[in-house]
Length: 246
Image (cartoon, rainbow, N blue to C red; front, side):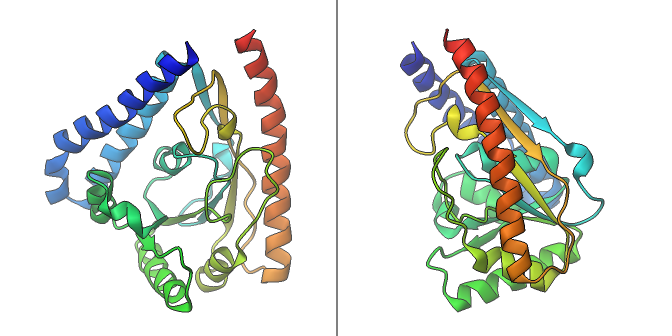
């Protein structure tokens, strides 16, 4: 039954991506913020599908910790859903994303329209400089910058492997507060594959880390708060999942 529901959800996920992508094509010729709102709607449609099809609830905690104005959103990264949550919690997010996604139908078109920050994951010095230049341009317009400090999806309980170059460079160049966002999403939504297991996905927005910390101070602090909170959410989610699965 879980396998069947999982396949039905994949159809929901990509079917609605196509539907929304086509219906909102006119937004590609309207102000950028209109396309942002279209992506936010699609993010909510994903949450509805998780609940109706897969018996997966989603909860977002800690919105009171979001600062006014621009900030750096530093999220734990388990799965595709993590990319869409910022559109729900942030007013005008600019996500640092791998350049290959620009070549995907619909996803790439709207990423270009909303001026996301595509990068080459090879991580050369040229890539880093380009990312910083783009991030400064987005922040100048009052937008928040979204980054996943591990650089790629990691499975729950996997030892963390944070990539300090990107987040440290942003911290130094932008001088913005950093908002860590923990999650247990990987319990229900695997980073790879189609299986969606009943349970509860929780995103928790944690108290902001002040701007201006040097790299040696920032990275241990960021890793500690993200891992501690995410591990706590994994324990909570595992208990809920056990109850749902009987």
